[in-house]
Image (spheres, rainbow, N blue to C red):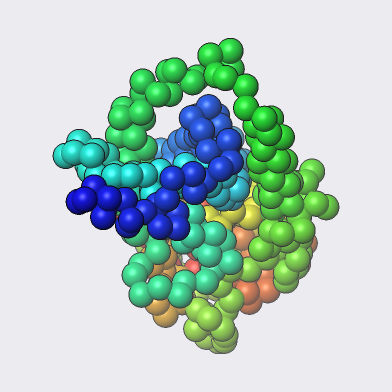
Length: 374
């Protein structure tokens, strides 16, 4: 009688045969999981690299100049590609949530808890990362730190999940080993087409030859003041008006202060370099200004000195940044006065800004007030 009472609890999705689709099966889940796992690993590795670049200024060298542009572009492209993959994966396996009995022992309970942690971490990563591409933060917690630590939870959860499901994955890893299921090829083709479509219509914000197809990307890299997008305007940074007595302070053994006219009278150099931002967009421009290493030589800075750069902006996590000598002494690193042949617009950092090869956009300091050789 007791067993009959328990069986009466099996209503809705808990009842026998509640999920008739044949695609809720291991081979389909293994194939999609393989794609999803690859995207997650690429996203994690490139995101970790970006985090290290922003926090400690490494480990990428200053060349090639497009290195960060490529890695951060891959980070956002793989993250967006995960959205349809994650949806397909969850649809394939979600009947497991309603298996009966719900808990079949301690190990089964731990496995379900691990899967719950993995799914929650990946969903949070994808959700917050997608909203970061449009710079919308409706949550009360800090994005960057939360995104970073949740990524480690997602990776750890993935490794535990692979360990627990290794026998099942091995059994269904081969197409020959899996029994044929009607509709599987069509479903996998639809998932592939969905991933291709979202990639094609968003990757143009960082891949130049896909720019015309950039229909869903939050940014068009060719739109903005002087043909470049802007993440933080002068008004947002509190630098709407530059002081009339502005001077660039250059610190070192022989410190100097230079007016804008004096900077303009120094030898000018031109370099074509990209701005590559953590939101996934990037754009190249032609920059003209004074080589940073010439300023450092003028004040007698040691060749291996780290350089601290201070902006006129009133606040923000990147108001003060540091640059390793690898970048500071690169001949392409400029204190730029012009972009694409025009004097910098206020939103692009007037009167002067830093532009260096292979650095995140948040470290290309605008509205520079002080440069110090440490």
